[in-house]
Length: 175
Image (tube, rainbow, N blue to C red; front, side, top):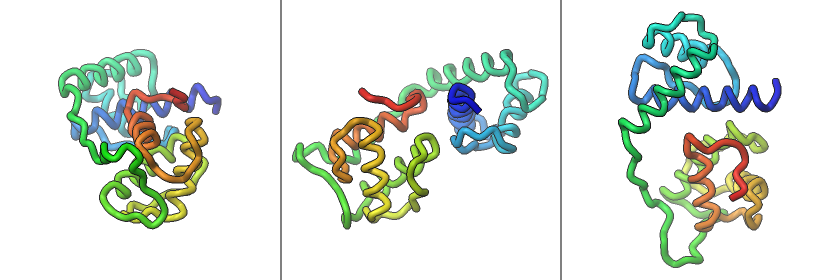
């Protein structure tokens, strides 16, 4: 599979996942870039709900309808209010190896979700402890995003993690 096809599947899965929150008949799909049974079932349900031919395959009509439904769901739901988990003060605040708490759980969740898209590091269990697996994943993420590679999450790394998680984020951001 070429990178463009895989990116199309990632986007398809993002759109379906977003719609699944508002339309419970659409199954929740992993964003893994694999057009497997779960993704195919979600496409079939989307096609059924829109009166399209139910094939489980994405043709231009299905793609256009899905993208339009995704955009409409974003407009209808509005933007969610941000949850500021990362402390704003002091400016030098960072977390790293051995730290525990809700912020670490959030970091590990973000990394776990992004691992599906970026690859390059092992699955990260959802715990509240910043361990060596977390540190390695943070280093890898920082390297991809041309950030200082410290293995610690400071405000800049946190902001980049959050930006990369947004549904409209595509590819390896270097901003």
